[in-house]
Image (cartoon, rainbow, N blue to C red; front, side, top):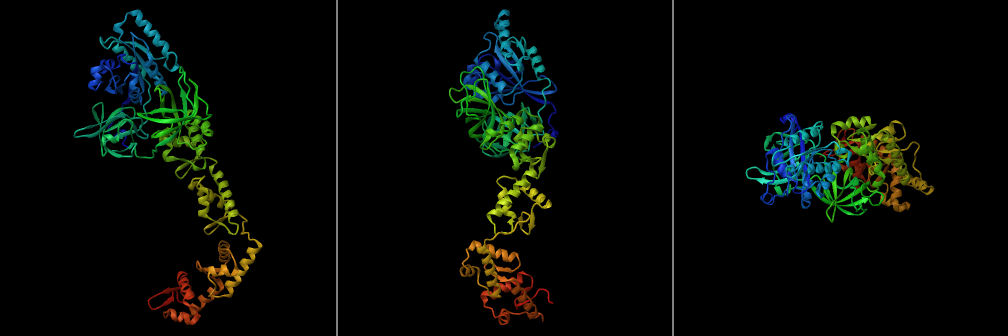
Length: 638
């Protein structure tokens, strides 16, 4: 994706989001702060009720590029509120002074806590409607609500009137202080933008809007769309109607796309860079149930999951199959009914299927965890709460001999690529090929290879060794191929394996034959040697010696590898001594340099075509003779 050096402002991007009960004056306050009417729909203006998201620029600090998202307060439109809450850095909680905190105030604040929005300011709106005593009471009640959470104890409560303008400037100052010290989001990251609006503009085509969660996007870039996998090119970018060549994380933007219809990239879709992202159908999570509720989260319960701007249904599976009590946390699996484009460390909201009320939140610990996931929860704790070194070491340990793919480690750990290589090395990990492994992975893989070779020896006791391909196949279900190859090389160097052509064997291994098989091998050798250049074909040998085909093949292979016979064709095995004699006779026959037709060989050796042609072709393959239109000649005349 494009980088900021291609022309984007170096100001940090900040997103402020409103929250609060319906009719507490959020939209009027945004209008007073920005001069922008964020109620876009005629129905909203007629009813005086925000039902969808609104957006505006809010100039507060020359070093910051700040946008504000106005969300609906009515409980019927909480889904839209959740879509707007995605990517918020600072919460502007709106509480009407004449009513105080109301049900949606509490729910919106709970959602902010679950999404880890720690900075905020409370606007005590409609202050012009109450006297001083009532205003003090509203401030005190609001303060008590904030003090329930230590992260919100420092939030300012600012009385304000959108009608008269009183308190607007102190509110601006309060927002500036809340934004101070917010770290810029890394632009050296994977691009992801959850879409909250999609529409078409004549002459422009498909336009989507959203907050850039991570990375950056530039004009001319190619992006992918989830779900659907469509590919689109970025025609143009805007930040609050200001054209940009590139937009970085932490900014709201509009993206004009070429190659995709609005219907294919609706709210709930995600734009992302076409790299190594994969969708998830299962999420290993730490779930947090909201306190103050009278219903626990139950194992097997069907829930609504809100990640970014997308809503999907899921079944909750707790690690111990027990309910999650209000206010408690637990490890769980979400079996999704539709896929999500998630990343480890993402946060999402849970709501009951019915009645639709917010019940808790999650933080993603592992994407698509395997069966037996409850045994992985200790590592999940390290991935979410540990240092970068501890997190990657835990993730690598979970992968075992399969390894953690370096190309997707940023997504699997929820951290930027640029920080992971150093963290992996400091966490004691080693990189082999394109994957990270624990420091002892090579030693463990070496033991696994030895065990596999021993099992293969036992399964094929008549073989002098096992094929390298058989070893690869045996290791494939449990070990990365490059790690397995590294382990084999180390074993050979340490002489813990021996190599013979395409075969491997443990030191001291030898074929083990029964007494009956030993006798069969001796009879086979005698029969082939006695027949000279015209031995029975393999099928005939099996019949005459009463040997099972599998046993026969193994015995023939042993004779061949010991140098007693050679395979002229898969069905024709000839004594090596007879072939050497024939080769010497052929060299004498062709010593004069004149080409010899097949008839001359037939006269010399007295062989039928059944044997003569395969034998001559064998000499051709061995580089003794060359076939020409006049007949065969020596490749290198003696």
